[in-house]
Length: 444
Image 1: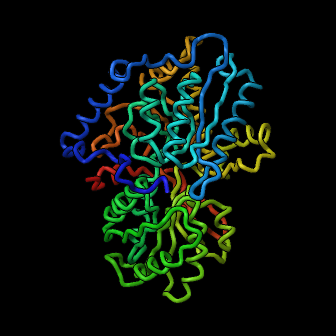
Image 2: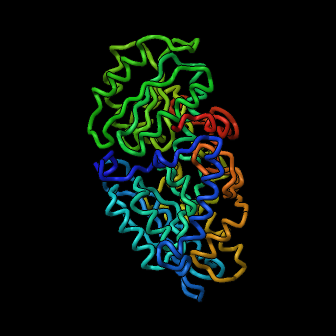
Image 3: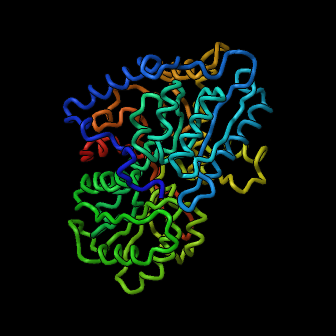
Protein backbone atom coordinates (compact mmCIF):
# COMPACT_ATOMS: atom_id res chain seq x y z
CA UNK A 1 0.00 0.00 0.00
CA UNK A 2 1.36 3.39 -0.90
CA UNK A 3 1.22 4.75 2.64
CA UNK A 4 3.30 1.97 4.18
CA UNK A 5 6.94 2.18 5.16
CA UNK A 6 9.35 1.64 2.31
CA UNK A 7 13.09 1.88 2.36
CA UNK A 8 12.99 3.91 -0.85
CA UNK A 9 10.58 6.52 0.51
CA UNK A 10 11.62 9.32 2.84
CA UNK A 11 9.84 9.39 6.15
CA UNK A 12 7.35 12.10 6.93
CA UNK A 13 9.02 12.40 10.36
CA UNK A 14 11.87 14.77 10.91
CA UNK A 15 15.09 12.89 10.07
CA UNK A 16 16.82 11.65 13.18
CA UNK A 17 19.83 13.84 12.43
CA UNK A 18 17.53 16.87 12.85
CA UNK A 19 16.01 15.76 16.14
CA UNK A 20 17.91 18.15 18.36
CA UNK A 21 17.90 18.17 22.12
CA UNK A 22 14.94 20.07 23.49
CA UNK A 23 17.17 22.88 24.73
CA UNK A 24 18.16 23.86 21.17
CA UNK A 25 15.37 22.35 19.08
CA UNK A 26 13.02 25.34 19.19
CA UNK A 27 15.73 27.83 18.22
CA UNK A 28 17.08 25.67 15.43
CA UNK A 29 13.70 24.91 13.93
CA UNK A 30 12.57 28.52 14.08
CA UNK A 31 15.70 29.82 12.42
CA UNK A 32 15.71 27.01 9.88
CA UNK A 33 12.11 27.58 8.91
CA UNK A 34 12.66 31.30 8.37
CA UNK A 35 15.78 30.61 6.36
CA UNK A 36 13.87 28.14 4.22
CA UNK A 37 11.31 30.83 3.37
CA UNK A 38 14.03 33.30 2.47
CA UNK A 39 16.01 30.88 0.31
CA UNK A 40 13.22 29.36 -1.78
CA UNK A 41 13.95 31.50 -4.84
CA UNK A 42 17.67 30.76 -4.82
CA UNK A 43 17.64 27.10 -3.84
CA UNK A 44 14.82 26.03 -6.12
CA UNK A 45 15.52 28.22 -9.12
CA UNK A 46 12.07 29.85 -9.19
CA UNK A 47 10.62 33.08 -7.92
CA UNK A 48 8.10 32.41 -5.12
CA UNK A 49 4.71 33.95 -5.53
CA UNK A 50 4.65 34.32 -9.31
CA UNK A 51 1.60 32.04 -9.39
CA UNK A 52 -1.86 33.54 -9.41
CA UNK A 53 -1.34 36.93 -11.04
CA UNK A 54 -2.73 40.27 -9.92
CA UNK A 55 -5.20 41.20 -12.65
CA UNK A 56 -8.96 40.95 -12.82
CA UNK A 57 -9.12 37.25 -13.66
CA UNK A 58 -10.17 34.57 -11.17
CA UNK A 59 -8.14 33.77 -8.10
CA UNK A 60 -6.97 30.18 -8.57
CA UNK A 61 -6.57 27.68 -5.72
CA UNK A 62 -6.51 23.89 -5.48
CA UNK A 63 -8.02 21.34 -3.10
CA UNK A 64 -6.95 17.70 -3.21
CA UNK A 65 -7.89 14.50 -1.38
CA UNK A 66 -7.94 10.73 -2.02
CA UNK A 67 -11.04 9.34 -3.69
CA UNK A 68 -11.96 5.81 -4.74
CA UNK A 69 -9.08 4.10 -2.91
CA UNK A 70 -9.09 0.99 -0.73
CA UNK A 71 -7.96 3.02 2.30
CA UNK A 72 -9.09 6.43 3.63
CA UNK A 73 -11.12 8.57 1.20
CA UNK A 74 -12.17 12.19 1.58
CA UNK A 75 -14.37 13.02 -1.44
CA UNK A 76 -16.32 15.58 0.57
CA UNK A 77 -13.34 17.93 0.78
CA UNK A 78 -12.93 18.77 -2.93
CA UNK A 79 -16.70 18.55 -3.42
CA UNK A 80 -17.27 21.13 -0.70
CA UNK A 81 -14.49 23.34 -2.08
CA UNK A 82 -16.30 23.51 -5.42
CA UNK A 83 -19.60 24.26 -3.66
CA UNK A 84 -17.93 27.00 -1.63
CA UNK A 85 -16.59 28.62 -4.80
CA UNK A 86 -20.06 28.58 -6.36
CA UNK A 87 -21.53 30.17 -3.25
CA UNK A 88 -18.79 32.78 -2.89
CA UNK A 89 -18.92 33.77 -6.58
CA UNK A 90 -22.70 34.13 -6.37
CA UNK A 91 -22.19 36.55 -3.48
CA UNK A 92 -19.65 38.93 -4.96
CA UNK A 93 -16.57 36.73 -5.13
CA UNK A 94 -13.32 37.28 -3.29
CA UNK A 95 -12.33 40.93 -3.31
CA UNK A 96 -14.54 41.40 -6.33
CA UNK A 97 -12.91 38.54 -8.25
CA UNK A 98 -14.17 35.04 -8.89
CA UNK A 99 -12.62 32.15 -7.01
CA UNK A 100 -11.59 29.25 -9.25
CA UNK A 101 -11.12 25.95 -7.41
CA UNK A 102 -9.07 23.23 -9.05
CA UNK A 103 -9.54 19.76 -7.55
CA UNK A 104 -7.28 16.75 -7.71
CA UNK A 105 -7.42 13.09 -6.60
CA UNK A 106 -4.20 12.20 -4.80
CA UNK A 107 -5.27 8.50 -4.92
CA UNK A 108 -3.36 7.83 -1.67
CA UNK A 109 -0.32 7.53 -3.90
CA UNK A 110 3.00 9.38 -3.96
CA UNK A 111 3.04 9.75 -7.75
CA UNK A 112 -0.51 11.13 -7.89
CA UNK A 113 0.16 13.50 -4.95
CA UNK A 114 3.20 14.91 -6.75
CA UNK A 115 1.14 15.28 -9.94
CA UNK A 116 -1.49 17.27 -8.04
CA UNK A 117 1.18 19.62 -6.70
CA UNK A 118 2.78 20.07 -10.12
CA UNK A 119 -0.63 20.91 -11.58
CA UNK A 120 -1.18 23.51 -8.86
CA UNK A 121 2.12 25.13 -9.85
CA UNK A 122 1.43 24.93 -13.59
CA UNK A 123 -2.06 26.42 -13.34
CA UNK A 124 -1.03 29.32 -11.14
CA UNK A 125 -2.67 28.40 -7.83
CA UNK A 126 -2.08 30.98 -5.11
CA UNK A 127 -2.69 28.33 -2.42
CA UNK A 128 -3.63 24.71 -1.81
CA UNK A 129 -6.57 24.87 0.58
CA UNK A 130 -8.39 22.37 2.81
CA UNK A 131 -6.70 19.22 1.54
CA UNK A 132 -5.85 15.69 2.70
CA UNK A 133 -2.79 13.63 1.76
CA UNK A 134 -0.47 11.23 3.54
CA UNK A 135 2.30 11.94 1.01
CA UNK A 136 3.84 15.21 2.13
CA UNK A 137 7.28 14.18 0.89
CA UNK A 138 5.81 13.96 -2.61
CA UNK A 139 3.92 17.26 -2.72
CA UNK A 140 5.67 19.72 -0.41
CA UNK A 141 8.86 20.05 -2.51
CA UNK A 142 6.78 21.28 -5.46
CA UNK A 143 4.77 23.72 -3.35
CA UNK A 144 7.86 24.99 -1.56
CA UNK A 145 9.69 25.41 -4.86
CA UNK A 146 6.93 27.68 -6.14
CA UNK A 147 6.23 29.37 -2.80
CA UNK A 148 2.62 28.14 -2.70
CA UNK A 149 1.12 28.04 0.80
CA UNK A 150 -0.65 24.90 2.05
CA UNK A 151 -3.60 26.19 4.08
CA UNK A 152 -5.63 23.93 6.34
CA UNK A 153 -4.31 20.48 5.54
CA UNK A 154 -6.01 17.69 7.45
CA UNK A 155 -3.01 17.31 9.76
CA UNK A 156 -2.17 13.73 8.84
CA UNK A 157 1.63 14.12 8.52
CA UNK A 158 4.30 15.72 10.66
CA UNK A 159 5.50 17.80 7.70
CA UNK A 160 2.29 19.83 7.90
CA UNK A 161 3.54 21.09 11.27
CA UNK A 162 7.13 21.75 10.18
CA UNK A 163 7.06 23.20 6.64
CA UNK A 164 7.35 26.99 6.61
CA UNK A 165 4.67 27.06 3.89
CA UNK A 166 2.11 25.11 5.91
CA UNK A 167 -0.72 26.84 7.78
CA UNK A 168 -2.59 24.12 9.70
CA UNK A 169 -5.92 24.99 11.29
CA UNK A 170 -5.99 22.07 13.75
CA UNK A 171 -3.51 20.06 15.79
CA UNK A 172 -3.67 16.94 13.64
CA UNK A 173 -4.09 13.46 15.00
CA UNK A 174 -1.31 14.18 17.50
CA UNK A 175 -3.48 16.57 19.50
CA UNK A 176 -6.52 14.28 19.26
CA UNK A 177 -4.66 11.29 20.65
CA UNK A 178 -2.90 13.31 23.35
CA UNK A 179 -6.26 14.66 24.49
CA UNK A 180 -7.84 11.22 24.34
CA UNK A 181 -5.03 9.67 26.36
CA UNK A 182 -5.37 12.31 29.04
CA UNK A 183 -9.10 11.64 29.27
CA UNK A 184 -8.71 7.85 29.40
CA UNK A 185 -5.85 7.75 31.93
CA UNK A 186 -7.98 7.76 35.11
CA UNK A 187 -10.64 5.48 33.62
CA UNK A 188 -8.86 2.62 31.86
CA UNK A 189 -6.84 -0.41 32.76
CA UNK A 190 -4.63 -1.60 29.93
CA UNK A 191 -4.97 0.39 26.72
CA UNK A 192 -4.57 -1.08 23.23
CA UNK A 193 -4.08 1.26 20.27
CA UNK A 194 -5.00 -0.09 16.84
CA UNK A 195 -3.59 2.23 14.19
CA UNK A 196 -2.48 2.13 10.54
CA UNK A 197 0.77 0.35 9.68
CA UNK A 198 1.95 3.39 7.72
CA UNK A 199 4.53 6.13 8.02
CA UNK A 200 1.90 8.58 9.22
CA UNK A 201 0.61 6.02 11.72
CA UNK A 202 4.00 5.55 13.36
CA UNK A 203 3.71 8.78 15.37
CA UNK A 204 0.32 7.98 16.88
CA UNK A 205 1.41 5.77 19.84
CA UNK A 206 3.81 8.49 21.03
CA UNK A 207 1.03 11.04 21.22
CA UNK A 208 -1.51 8.76 22.89
CA UNK A 209 1.14 7.79 25.42
CA UNK A 210 1.90 11.45 26.11
CA UNK A 211 -1.68 11.86 27.28
CA UNK A 212 -1.75 8.61 29.21
CA UNK A 213 1.49 9.28 31.07
CA UNK A 214 0.37 12.85 31.84
CA UNK A 215 -2.50 11.20 33.71
CA UNK A 216 -0.24 8.75 35.55
CA UNK A 217 -1.05 5.75 33.34
CA UNK A 218 1.17 3.15 31.71
CA UNK A 219 1.93 3.44 28.01
CA UNK A 220 -0.44 1.82 25.53
CA UNK A 221 0.12 -1.40 23.61
CA UNK A 222 0.85 -0.46 20.00
CA UNK A 223 -0.86 -2.66 17.42
CA UNK A 224 -0.22 -1.66 13.79
CA UNK A 225 -2.82 -2.92 11.30
CA UNK A 226 -3.21 -2.78 7.51
CA UNK A 227 -5.15 0.32 6.52
CA UNK A 228 -6.80 -1.41 3.56
CA UNK A 229 -7.94 -4.71 5.10
CA UNK A 230 -11.43 -6.05 4.50
CA UNK A 231 -11.64 -7.61 7.99
CA UNK A 232 -9.70 -7.34 11.26
CA UNK A 233 -10.49 -10.46 13.27
CA UNK A 234 -6.88 -11.13 14.27
CA UNK A 235 -6.24 -7.52 15.21
CA UNK A 236 -9.50 -7.27 17.18
CA UNK A 237 -8.70 -10.39 19.19
CA UNK A 238 -5.14 -9.20 19.85
CA UNK A 239 -6.46 -5.86 21.08
CA UNK A 240 -9.03 -7.54 23.32
CA UNK A 241 -6.48 -9.96 24.78
CA UNK A 242 -4.11 -7.12 25.58
CA UNK A 243 -6.74 -4.79 27.01
CA UNK A 244 -8.15 -7.47 29.32
CA UNK A 245 -4.88 -9.02 30.46
CA UNK A 246 -4.67 -7.08 33.70
CA UNK A 247 -4.76 -3.68 35.31
CA UNK A 248 -2.39 -0.85 34.56
CA UNK A 249 -1.72 1.85 37.08
CA UNK A 250 -5.24 3.18 36.72
CA UNK A 251 -7.58 2.47 39.59
CA UNK A 252 -10.14 1.43 36.99
CA UNK A 253 -9.68 -2.18 35.96
CA UNK A 254 -11.66 -2.09 32.72
CA UNK A 255 -9.45 -2.21 29.63
CA UNK A 256 -9.80 0.21 26.71
CA UNK A 257 -9.37 -0.32 22.97
CA UNK A 258 -8.52 2.82 21.01
CA UNK A 259 -8.95 2.75 17.23
CA UNK A 260 -7.45 5.26 14.80
CA UNK A 261 -7.82 3.54 11.43
CA UNK A 262 -9.51 6.30 9.46
CA UNK A 263 -12.14 4.96 7.09
CA UNK A 264 -11.32 1.39 8.13
CA UNK A 265 -12.43 1.98 11.72
CA UNK A 266 -15.95 0.81 10.84
CA UNK A 267 -14.53 -2.36 9.29
CA UNK A 268 -12.45 -2.98 12.41
CA UNK A 269 -15.47 -2.52 14.66
CA UNK A 270 -17.41 -5.14 12.69
CA UNK A 271 -14.67 -7.65 13.54
CA UNK A 272 -14.41 -6.32 17.08
CA UNK A 273 -18.14 -6.76 17.70
CA UNK A 274 -17.98 -10.40 16.58
CA UNK A 275 -14.94 -11.13 18.75
CA UNK A 276 -15.74 -9.30 21.97
CA UNK A 277 -18.18 -11.85 23.44
CA UNK A 278 -15.31 -14.11 24.41
CA UNK A 279 -13.60 -11.45 26.53
CA UNK A 280 -14.38 -9.33 29.59
CA UNK A 281 -16.05 -6.01 28.90
CA UNK A 282 -13.86 -3.22 27.56
CA UNK A 283 -14.43 0.41 26.72
CA UNK A 284 -13.78 1.81 23.27
CA UNK A 285 -12.44 5.20 22.29
CA UNK A 286 -11.45 6.87 19.05
CA UNK A 287 -10.89 10.18 17.30
CA UNK A 288 -12.99 12.11 14.84
CA UNK A 289 -11.82 11.37 11.34
CA UNK A 290 -11.96 7.71 12.27
CA UNK A 291 -15.59 7.79 13.34
CA UNK A 292 -18.69 9.87 12.69
CA UNK A 293 -22.41 9.40 13.25
CA UNK A 294 -22.71 7.22 10.14
CA UNK A 295 -20.07 4.81 11.46
CA UNK A 296 -21.72 4.76 14.89
CA UNK A 297 -25.09 3.95 13.31
CA UNK A 298 -23.60 1.17 11.18
CA UNK A 299 -21.98 -0.36 14.28
CA UNK A 300 -25.31 -0.67 16.06
CA UNK A 301 -25.85 2.84 17.47
CA UNK A 302 -26.89 2.57 21.16
CA UNK A 303 -26.46 -1.23 21.15
CA UNK A 304 -23.09 -1.11 19.40
CA UNK A 305 -19.50 -1.07 20.67
CA UNK A 306 -19.22 2.73 20.49
CA UNK A 307 -21.91 3.36 23.12
CA UNK A 308 -20.24 5.21 25.99
CA UNK A 309 -17.05 5.71 23.98
CA UNK A 310 -15.01 8.87 24.31
CA UNK A 311 -14.16 10.64 21.06
CA UNK A 312 -11.84 13.61 20.68
CA UNK A 313 -12.30 16.14 17.90
CA UNK A 314 -10.81 19.44 16.80
CA UNK A 315 -14.05 21.32 16.49
CA UNK A 316 -17.46 21.63 18.18
CA UNK A 317 -20.08 18.96 17.52
CA UNK A 318 -21.93 19.23 14.20
CA UNK A 319 -25.08 20.49 15.95
CA UNK A 320 -23.28 23.55 17.32
CA UNK A 321 -24.72 26.85 16.01
CA UNK A 322 -21.22 27.94 14.95
CA UNK A 323 -21.56 25.64 11.91
CA UNK A 324 -24.65 27.49 10.61
CA UNK A 325 -22.74 29.52 7.96
CA UNK A 326 -21.17 26.33 6.54
CA UNK A 327 -24.53 24.59 6.48
CA UNK A 328 -25.99 27.57 4.62
CA UNK A 329 -23.38 27.12 1.89
CA UNK A 330 -24.20 23.42 1.65
CA UNK A 331 -27.95 23.96 1.56
CA UNK A 332 -27.70 26.64 -1.13
CA UNK A 333 -25.07 25.12 -3.40
CA UNK A 334 -24.63 21.41 -2.54
CA UNK A 335 -27.78 20.15 -0.81
CA UNK A 336 -28.09 17.17 -3.17
CA UNK A 337 -24.40 16.19 -3.14
CA UNK A 338 -24.22 13.13 -0.88
CA UNK A 339 -20.43 13.39 -0.69
CA UNK A 340 -20.74 16.51 1.46
CA UNK A 341 -21.64 15.73 5.07
CA UNK A 342 -21.59 18.71 7.48
CA UNK A 343 -20.52 16.32 10.26
CA UNK A 344 -17.45 15.16 8.31
CA UNK A 345 -14.22 16.55 9.78
CA UNK A 346 -12.75 16.79 6.29
CA UNK A 347 -15.59 19.05 5.13
CA UNK A 348 -15.34 21.05 8.36
CA UNK A 349 -11.58 21.51 7.94
CA UNK A 350 -12.10 22.65 4.34
CA UNK A 351 -14.66 25.24 5.45
CA UNK A 352 -12.27 26.67 8.04
CA UNK A 353 -9.35 26.63 5.57
CA UNK A 354 -11.31 28.62 2.98
CA UNK A 355 -12.21 31.15 5.65
CA UNK A 356 -8.48 31.54 6.33
CA UNK A 357 -7.91 32.14 2.62
CA UNK A 358 -10.75 34.66 2.45
CA UNK A 359 -9.45 36.69 5.38
CA UNK A 360 -5.90 36.60 4.02
CA UNK A 361 -7.05 37.93 0.63
CA UNK A 362 -9.28 40.56 2.21
CA UNK A 363 -6.34 41.79 4.27
CA UNK A 364 -4.56 42.72 1.02
CA UNK A 365 -7.07 45.56 0.49
CA UNK A 366 -7.38 45.09 -3.25
CA UNK A 367 -3.66 44.61 -3.85
CA UNK A 368 -2.15 41.82 -5.94
CA UNK A 369 -3.29 38.33 -4.95
CA UNK A 370 -0.44 35.90 -5.50
CA UNK A 371 1.03 32.97 -3.63
CA UNK A 372 3.66 35.39 -2.32
CA UNK A 373 1.22 38.02 -1.04
CA UNK A 374 -1.09 35.44 0.55
CA UNK A 375 1.87 33.84 2.31
CA UNK A 376 3.22 37.17 3.53
CA UNK A 377 -0.21 38.15 4.84
CA UNK A 378 -0.34 34.98 6.94
CA UNK A 379 3.29 35.28 8.05
CA UNK A 380 2.79 38.93 9.01
CA UNK A 381 0.80 38.15 12.13
CA UNK A 382 -2.70 38.20 10.62
CA UNK A 383 -5.18 37.01 13.25
CA UNK A 384 -7.82 34.68 11.81
CA UNK A 385 -11.27 34.54 13.39
CA UNK A 386 -13.07 31.25 12.72
CA UNK A 387 -16.32 32.18 14.44
CA UNK A 388 -15.67 30.05 17.50
CA UNK A 389 -14.85 26.85 15.61
CA UNK A 390 -11.22 27.12 16.75
CA UNK A 391 -9.34 29.60 18.89
CA UNK A 392 -8.09 32.60 16.88
CA UNK A 393 -5.35 31.41 14.52
CA UNK A 394 -1.99 33.08 13.92
CA UNK A 395 1.16 31.43 12.59
CA UNK A 396 4.57 32.29 13.98
CA UNK A 397 7.85 30.41 14.35
CA UNK A 398 8.21 30.95 18.07
CA UNK A 399 5.21 29.05 19.40
CA UNK A 400 5.66 26.64 22.28
CA UNK A 401 5.44 23.42 20.26
CA UNK A 402 8.53 24.29 18.23
CA UNK A 403 10.34 22.66 21.16
CA UNK A 404 9.15 19.20 20.07
CA UNK A 405 9.62 19.79 16.36
CA UNK A 406 6.18 21.22 15.46
CA UNK A 407 6.82 24.94 14.85
CA UNK A 408 3.63 25.35 12.77
CA UNK A 409 1.26 23.71 15.27
CA UNK A 410 -0.58 26.77 16.60
CA UNK A 411 -3.89 25.18 17.62
CA UNK A 412 -3.63 22.37 20.16
CA UNK A 413 -7.23 22.69 21.36
CA UNK A 414 -9.48 19.62 21.22
CA UNK A 415 -13.09 18.94 22.08
CA UNK A 416 -14.30 16.00 24.13
CA UNK A 417 -17.31 14.11 22.82
CA UNK A 418 -19.04 10.89 23.72
CA UNK A 419 -21.59 8.49 22.28
CA UNK A 420 -24.75 8.67 24.35
CA UNK A 421 -27.88 6.71 23.36
CA UNK A 422 -26.29 6.11 20.00
CA UNK A 423 -25.66 9.82 19.29
CA UNK A 424 -22.35 11.67 19.21
CA UNK A 425 -22.71 14.55 21.67
CA UNK A 426 -20.45 16.94 23.56
CA UNK A 427 -18.99 15.42 26.73
CA UNK A 428 -17.77 18.82 27.95
CA UNK A 429 -18.39 22.35 26.83
CA UNK A 430 -15.64 24.29 25.13
CA UNK A 431 -12.10 23.28 24.26
CA UNK A 432 -9.31 21.50 26.10
CA UNK A 433 -5.79 22.81 25.39
CA UNK A 434 -3.29 19.92 25.17
CA UNK A 435 -0.23 22.07 24.45
CA UNK A 436 1.32 21.18 27.80
CA UNK A 437 0.74 17.48 27.19
CA UNK A 438 2.29 17.60 23.73
CA UNK A 439 5.32 19.47 25.06
CA UNK A 440 6.13 16.41 27.18
CA UNK A 441 5.78 13.92 24.30
CA UNK A 442 8.83 11.74 23.77
CA UNK A 443 9.23 12.43 20.05
CA UNK A 444 12.79 11.09 19.99
